[in-house]
Amino acid sequence: MSYEKVLQAGKFIIGTKQTVKALQEGIVRELIIASDADHKVVAKAVNEAKERNIPIYYVDSMKKLGKACRIEVGAAAVAIIR
Image 1 (tube, helix red, strand yellow):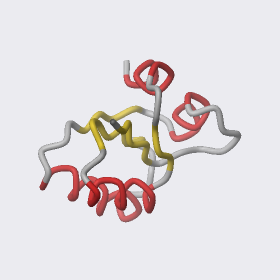
Image 2 (cartoon, helix red, strand yellow):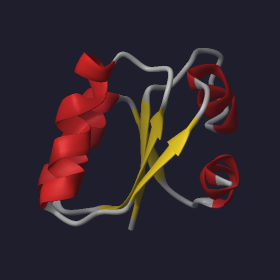
Image 3 (tube, rainbow, N blue to C red):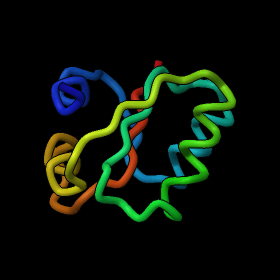
């Protein structure tokens, strides 16, 4: 389900650091987190999203999430932006 959201999204940001920054700027519509990502890596992004009431979706694989973003490596977090 969420892989399709990434594929259909016009604009998105890949990576936890960039995602946290976008959350702080208030431009994120939805956050997608890979369940197999290290919890310590994605914790700040998840906490920022919860504080701002941004919907969080979980997918099973970093590799598949990266592929949905059209990159060759895995992605722990992806923010769909406005």
